[in-house]
Image (cartoon, rainbow, N blue to C red; front, side):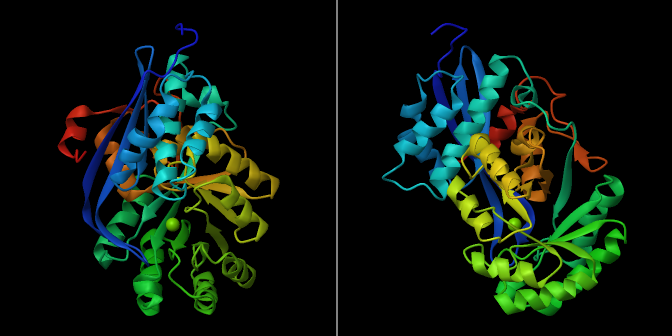
Length: 369
Ligand SMILES: [Mg+2]
């Protein structure tokens, strides 16, 4: 194929495990390191960069199960490539790390195409907005009061970000009193004018979530994420009906039908979707369209730089999650990361593609595969 009709020459995959800067945890999980699987897609002497946050085994899926259906394919035809990957994994199963593998490749292909066309990715997709609002996300249950206070103040006072989120539901909902004390402390840290969000990561049962939701309203909490397990769509809907706080979920969406089930169950006020899990930018855009058809906003889950451009391409965006753990890793491994000062980012000013390049020196230091 010619330069005007380039084919994908190769995919290269590397895996990097980066220790957290302090132990991190939420209502239902704790961790001390995060693994990022990085994909580089090559065509016509140009390289596109994609990634996902997933287990190291994700890299093997990309190499062993996906690469053969991508290499040699026209670089322009990303929906066809995405579909080919979905078909290739029929017998190994898609939800989970396989969908993360597909997502990382899809993101790399979008970046590659934009670079081949010498366009910022947002211009290839077509902008619906210039600025993308973000919210500071962290407030881990493993933090002491001082660390939580410092993190929240850094977002609000140093960066001017007017929305922040902390984790609650500690120990599978076993520490309600500490959850509420931490929310009270968070409110004291950020003042009255900053929006306060909470994420229980599915830790509570239904009645407990309703009880907590009512207490949270008194603290002017506007966002109650995964009050119960996302596997319990009826439970999410019940909590949504019982509290005035917005209920949000969707981070475990690994394919479009998941989001259809979530909207059909009237489970959320705002649909979350994660481009590094759901099938890449290709499927994230479809999830956003599905949400729009149901009168819902979308919020991008984690991996903020993977979402920046695609978020600017949809009309029904609420915001992106400026997730402490991933922001730190993206700033560490990539050049060209965006500045959230003032509470939003402006994708498209950093050159072609998503404007990010891998820093080989840094990446090599944390490489595990
Ligand atoms: Mg969450």
